[in-house]
Image 1: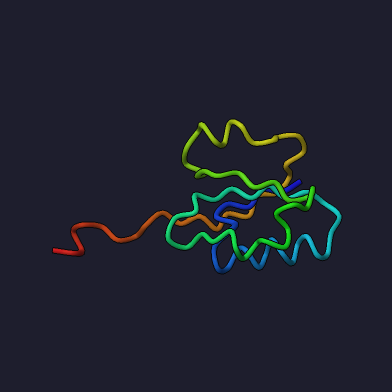
Image 2 (image 1 turned 120 degrees about the vertical axis):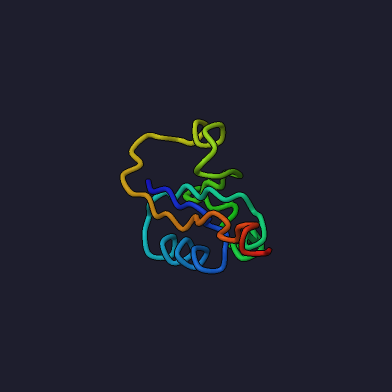
Length: 90
């Protein structure tokens, strides 16, 4: 079982689809579904028992604490916090 963060955005969703197409292994997909997250791109795997979607962020203990933890041996971190700082907008 692996964990993918931000797994519903325009790069990592392709990783999720490719992973499930080529392997018989569960993937835990953690995403906040903000500006880049789009579950529509994962429609084909939403009912696949190997795909576990969890709504949340890797930097929030509440949803992370509810993730299945048995045998997560790999983490693909696509999460990037917003880089726009208010200082840049002034």
